[in-house]
Image (cartoon, rainbow over all chains, first blue to last red; front, side, top):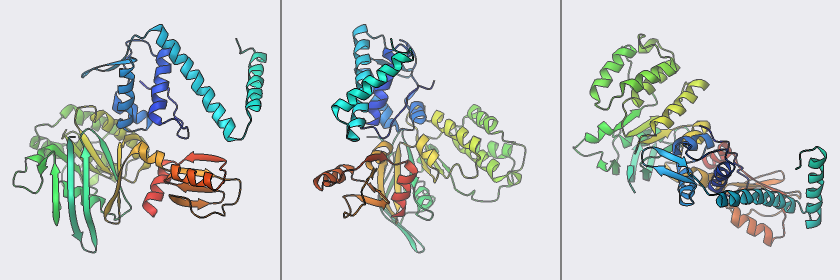
Length: 133
Length: 283
């Protein structure tokens, strides 16, 4: 199974962290349901073109935080997680996306006011297209 | 830490060329890509690991066992694919398989058949009548199916077409699923390094220039873009300077320097692995 993970090498977030956050988001959103067998460390490493040192770290962290449980010889499975944890991940995922956008804007010398304007313009566009809820 | 291969203070002189003070530790369960320019001694180094070439001095161990000693039982645990077949082979694929499979108790016949069918190898033909690509496919099938704990491959994708390269990558990934297997491969193929390697061992001017974890190496190199002309002296770690951009392998120090000098950069980028390797090997 291939996971829909997109890595940005230019992001300030380290690669292991990006993988970890995206797998959490897939679990929290229900795209990966409890009991799903995750790819092996070696095959995820190949798909994402990262070393097994990175992937191993991701799986260890996910296990520690209760998102994944590993069975010796069988592999890593998505764990049953609480609603509260799901919510936390959703909030964190959205916040991270905004943070990245804000960082990009500041790097291009935008002021806080200008960032707010871009944001409200974009929201308005979405609402006009009927995508907003 | 458990090591598949260790080399300490190994020296080797071949004609005009020499390998000096080679210190290397290859962790079990990992894939290491040995990288270097043509003639940098990659093949020599691999041959020394399996004692096909004697070292002048130094200590080499395979799975903890001294390869120069009288006890050669370590040979059962290592499979080696040379860059060039060592001799003219007068056999068909079947005959070669029969010869090789009987020597090794770990021979995996179903795996061999699977590789033969994935590559579409015709075992009934004489080895010498096969194309270079088909010869390489057969060599790979014979070496992988031995199921040795340590697999040493010298330019495994030489002569392989694009689909075959992909088949090989998938095969090697699957082969590594079993516990405690280790691969060391000498390669010039960036795609192979991207998909397979955990560590990159860089050989340069007869020495180990560095052993890097893949992401660690990628995160080390950054390119900065500027809207103003670059009329300042070299920044820390500067590797390259182009029109409006410069590349460094000490991004933190370089950023600090630029901030102190009040020089603003407009953008910063990570380099592609092939660019990093070109810089590493060229200098």
